Amino acid sequence: MAVAIDVIPDSDSDVAEIVDVVEMVDSEDEDEVAEVNPSGSPPLSFHGYRRGRELGQGGSSQVFVCSKAGCQIGFAAKAVNLRRLRMSPDVERELKKLSREVDIWKKLPGHPNIVQLVDSFQEGSWFLMVLELVGGGDLFTVLTSRSPSRFLDREAAYIGTQLVQGLAFLHSQGVIHRDLKLENVLVASQRRSYTNGPMLYNVKITDFGLSRVLDPSASDALSTVGTQPYCAPEVLGEGSHSFSADVWCLGVLLFVLIAGHFPYSSVPTEQPDLDCIVDSISATEAAKVLLLGLLQIQPQMRSHLPDLITHQWFQEEDDMQAQPLKRHRTQQMSDVGSAPRSLQEIQEVPQAIEEVETSQHSPCDSPFPCSPFPCESPLPCPSPLPAASPLPAPSPLDMEGIASPGVWTPFAVEATVKLSEVQPPADLQPDYMQVHVIIQDRYAGFILGKSGTRIQKTAFKSGCKVWMTSRDGSQDRRVIIIGGYKQCKLAQQMIHEQLATAMHMDWQDAEADTVLLVRAEAAGMVTGKQGFVLNQIRKQSGAQVQLLRDEVQGTRPCIISGTLQSILRAQKHIFELVRAAPVVVRPTTPNLRPSQQPFAG
Figure (cartoon, rainbow, N blue to C red):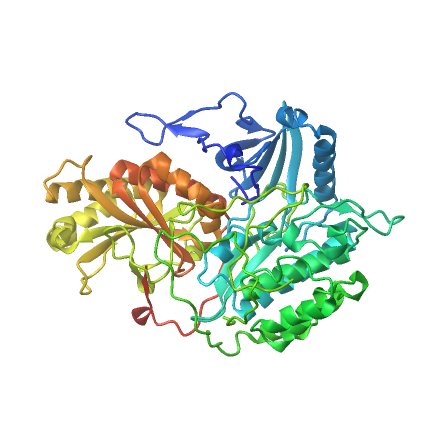
């Protein structure tokens, strides 16, 4: 099964509703599935791979999870519809671009900050690229889901170090990326270096659809490509450009991470104007010096990537774990269900703002190692050039399933998960689940049974670890279930039947609330771009599903409410995605006191 690939539809009409590759059938065994391969869909099986859940669609491509026999981790497959591509008025250009993308990916050796190509081949009217799985989503989605939409200085520096290393590697291979932007940087994992410290994101650069190898006999590229807010002045001026165009893109991207908005609505023509823009933001002097070196209108004046590795701003991030950083005052958290702040409007009012792993692979052939002015408004929607795909602005429904920390959820669940109640995912097998079933205190005794015999029987019959939390002053208690998918499913069925009996209801009509702990490194894949995949899971399961933003012991709580069948369907969809992502082993966070570190959703 596989990566969060950035596939941006050409228009809203190009986004079709996701249809599962496997659909549940009405039978006594809910785990039985009927394989469905609608006409015009990519093949179910190809070269030893098996297609899984679809993650997104574009004008002529689809992205889905796939698995391979003998591999415990999943992959991402990008399927390009050659039949539709040949109907394009620019068919020759599109086919050439596809061929160049594959050639570049094949040419690149493994690097920790570059998404790796695993395999590629043509199957009928489809061209398929199998890619390394990256489950944390793209930086655009991560940034716009934060409130306020910006990173702490140290968080941005940690990301910037990796992007410099990744770009320097590409340039050493003669490759100009030409479309470096938030959407083309994927999050592989995240962790905090210490309690309440900055969030450290491990990232990878992806999407070489606009890239090209610079011929040693030619000094520059000539075509005008890229996404407009990031494009270097020489590219917008339709002149020749070289590796330094990527350096400008990096400068814009880092500016956005620090400030939370693009540096300009149109590129200044004079360097002093650009210098004033950089100087206006609230950032450390080291960060401003770095940005000024990257954002030079004259390409030859821009910083050289190899020299940036030792830049003071990046060196400071090495000391992050030595002492905690004070978090600056931030804006009030947005309500649950609200969309990110407008991604469209740019106000031309200059104002200073506050600054606020080695993957374990099974024995299979895998090419990658285990392992003019600033504005106070939020990110505008990037306005692409003809060669790039537009990004649709998210609707309020897009992000409704991603709740801010500390905000009451819309369901009848007090989503308080204590650290002591959560088993870190590194301690579990990749195919294990961790589920909390919410039980009102008045029914807890019935679920437990005399001296706990009933819940012990549930654990014995299901083969899971099952226990109930003690009363802590709230009206709810939790039955915690840890085990394989089928075992957890059986345990939930038994507990639900007991709960329905206690409530004097038919078990098929009784509704419940559960919390599924999702491994943090796979949460981006479950959410999808601006909540795309999560919305489809809601529609297909019939359950209310909400993935919370805060992290607890390397997991993200996902509240699932509804009838038992709708809950189990939603859990199955989510579990299949999470299981595909490799487990990230996290260092033990020092100075944690579980009894004093509750998580309030």
